[in-house]
Amino acid sequence: MPYISQKKRDYYDRVLDKFLYIIDKGDLEYCIFKLMKLYMTDKKYRYSILHDCVYAAQHCADEFRRRYLDKREDDARDANGDVEV
Image (tube, rainbow, N blue to C red):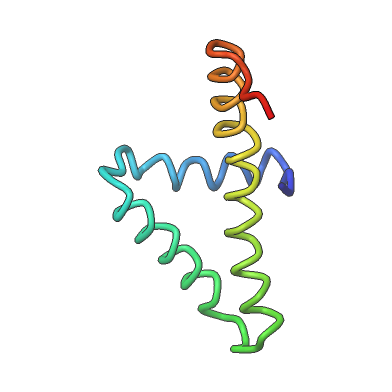
């Protein structure tokens, strides 16, 4: 994931922290979709830019999986034993 400057992080954190509570998966999907649409507001409707938008969302999903879901799977394997092949 791109690690943006602390100044930009502070700005986006102040804005995003106002979301206080996202209730369920549907709300989360709406927020992600809305952010993608906002990103496209002043961009040309071109394949490469649309692809960048989708890639950013996928890249975030990949990073989330790497940091959280994979760790959870590793913890479960350690606690319960590996599957024999």
